[in-house]
Amino acid sequence: MQFFSTLEKIEHFCDTCQERTLHYRFASQVAPFCAICSDRLATADQQQQRELSYQRFKQSLLSETSVELEHVELTRKEGKQEVITYAHQIACNSQNCTTKPNLLLFGSVGTGKTTHALYVALYAYQKLGIKAQYVKSYALVANIQPYLNSAMLIIDELHKAIRLYGEKPSEQDKTELYKLVEHRRNRKLPTIFISNYDKDGLLPSLGEELYDRISDKHKTIGVHFCGESYRQIIV
Image 1 (tube, rainbow, N blue to C red):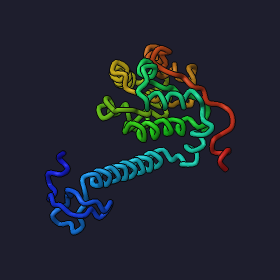
Image 2: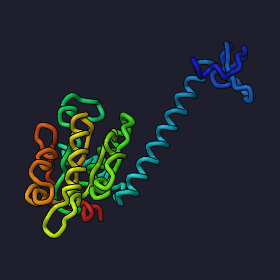
Image 3: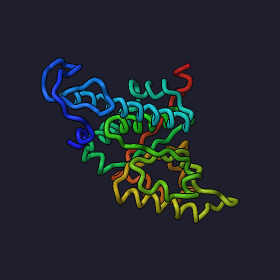
Image 4: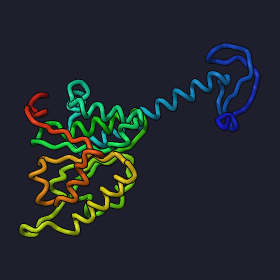
């Protein structure tokens, strides 16, 4: 094991388990420890590092989205079942999820769309180490390159992706967004789209071809959000 290649090998009592056996210690270390205990210590250290990494990732996402942690906790307990199931399928690498790798979350402001997306991202990171990227749609179309191959991508405010010149949508923005959607779709990379608008609100700016690519029922699970605001439930 490479871990032991930098350790001294001696015979002594293990300070952890008190067994007399072959022990290993770092040259700078006073107290020796045995092979079994060294594995346990290494495993505990790895678990601690994973937890620290998860906490940093969680704080980063919460900061970017201005979502409250208690809202995410509420989702875990009382969230939309379609989203909870999607998160579990991602985490277990389910075949059903690879055939439908995308989520389209749409509905009124404050009903928990972004919160649900964060629940999926945090669950996937905790279970598989999948690190999601979060981006506003209008920032995305300005530069799609950093997001093409993200392990998971959350695109917020989809309804703002395409700039309007008068009443005419930007063809350049539509082309860039189409490239990204098609690229990720072909590689079955999980993408979560969030919009305040439904089909009637998205079609004028996205156009039928792009909207169909995003909402394709064979690749995307659509979830409608309505009712009481998450923000009011917590208060």
